[in-house]
Image 1 (spheres, protein in one colour):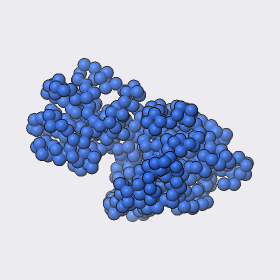
Image 2: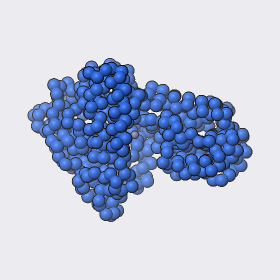
Image 3: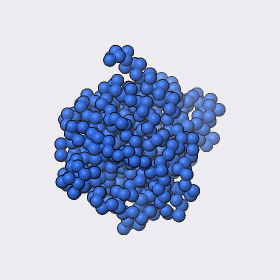
Image 4: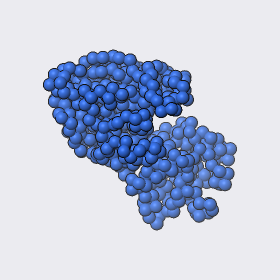
Length: 490
Ligand SMILES: [Zn+2]
């Protein structure tokens, strides 16, 4: 890193065969190598730590040790796109291992989650880094490096993308994002700003996590309508509604559907579920207030089920239900919003003769947090000339996306990024500068950090292939075929 300009390096997020552990370095160099300024965006945890081959491992995180310890990088800040563990939880492990972190910049909701996790991991007050709350439209400057905050629609509150500028180069770093402008109680993706600046954006570091899905990502208002329609058409009065704990937007979508249908609501779930309910409350979400006098709302299922009346919805992350809560199969309907997680519940419903609608029948029920290919095609209309840099995706998915990506008109970076590749982002073009091996830092039970080479982990550990290679390729072929039919093979 000698020439004046902007440099980018993925340190997690472009993994070999898994997702999670997202982390990106941006460094600008001024005055021919004399002055560097760096920021990190996100510092998540890598989920398949059991597979990295270290005894007593309790976590694996992106390797940012150099950035934290080598003063020449002049690391000024860690910007947090949102509160999910694959973008956030690396922070705690570095703090536990005794590292000092620079100031953190993130949303109000992210801070609520972070403060709770500091307590959980017993991080002493004096070791907690300074936190600056950011919001849509904020601009922060570090020397000549400028960061503008843009709201993003995702499955939690206060998710952000960033416009990162240095000299005449501008990067749109999307964070986890879909285009959905129908989000309830949170700011949607700031399309207006992207339209304004689109022509000036040279690079897009984008969330391509669900790029193998055709069309646009499910909108919250459509998921809501879908739930309402099912209940109305099937004339059901007792609803069992499952939600994924970290995806708080689904708590709200399910609640609003119940409100529309005039069903009393009882929340019911595991510790994880109630942790997120607590975050929602701290954030200012008050379900009872929202309901007014229209429906009854219970934080837990009341001892006497009759208190709920005869039209109700049980909303939560429960994997199975106690016997007494299964009532009148003819009136009941179960929504299964995540196949593997709620499988046991589905079996229970089947045994009771309760109708179940699962994501296999109706994929929209799972909600969506990440852009589908259609979302990116919408943004491409405004950000036409940029080089697109897919992230949040295993390497093999990206490799098989290439053909479709180019057919869809994306100017994809070449070669596609793998963790620890270093690129120079210029006005007139980019350059791959280094292609070093990538590493994870693995934490052990005794509080040590061990540097481990990144290797394929599919088939090892508790998480196997995040994606099926064959299924993904098939999906790409199907979408490609549709596009060729629509636009002709050019
Ligand atoms: Zn996320």
